[in-house]
Image 1 (cartoon, rainbow, N blue to C red):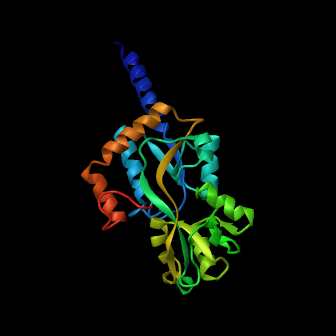
Image 2: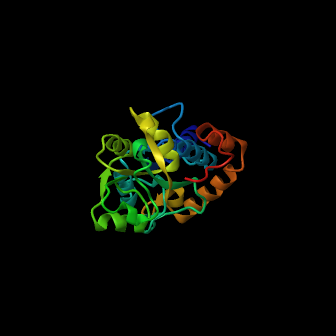
Image 3: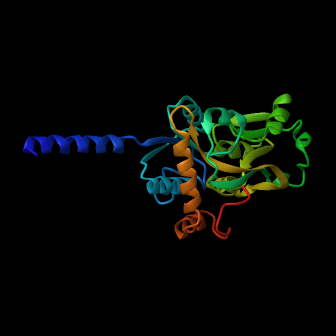
Length: 258
C-alpha cells in the first residue's frame, strides 16, 4: 500500500479510536456518604468505586459529576446526563429511566431525632408524624404513603441534602429527619454536634435497593443489561469485597439493611 494510503488509514483508525474514547457516559450523582463522596480522591464513595470498576471491565469510559440531587435527577430524565446514582426505585424514575436487574446496594429509610427527644418522640405508623415537622431531601424516593401523609397536612420541609436537614434538626427547626441508614450513620458525624443525633428505634419507613439508573433518552437496553450482568459478576470478586469492607467495615461481604 502506498505510504500516503497507510498514513490515511492510520489517521482514520486513530480518529475512530478517539471518537470511541470521547463517547463517555455522563453520570450524575450528589454528595451522599458513604455511597458518593466524589471530591474525596482517596475515598470517592462505595457506589463511585463500584461503578467505575464495572464500566472499566466493560471497556466503557464514564464521567461522573456531582450536583444537587434534584438537578442530577432532572438531567437524567431529560437526557442531559446518561445516568443517575445511587437511586431508590419509584414510579416517576421508572417512567424516565431504565433500572438494571442488579442493584448496587440495599438500604433503608429511617427517622432520625435529637437524642434528647428519644423518649419524647415515637414512631409506630405514619399517623405519628401528624403535627410534627419532618425534614426530607428534595426528590427523595421515600414511599408514596410517606409523601401522601406529610403533604396532606404540610408536615414536612425539604432541603437540598442531608447535612442541611441534620443542621435543622440540631437547631430544633424540624422534629424528625428522614435519611438512609448507611448515610445517616456517617453523615451526622460530619457536622458539629452530630453526636447528638440518633436513629429512632423501630422507625423504618422503607427498605429498598439502590441502583445506577439509565436515561431512556440516551442509553440502550442492551447497555443496561450488560452493566447489570457485569456488576453481578463483579460482586463475586475479592476486589468487590475489599471495596465493600472499606466503606462498611464489619458488615459482611455485601451491603444490606439500608
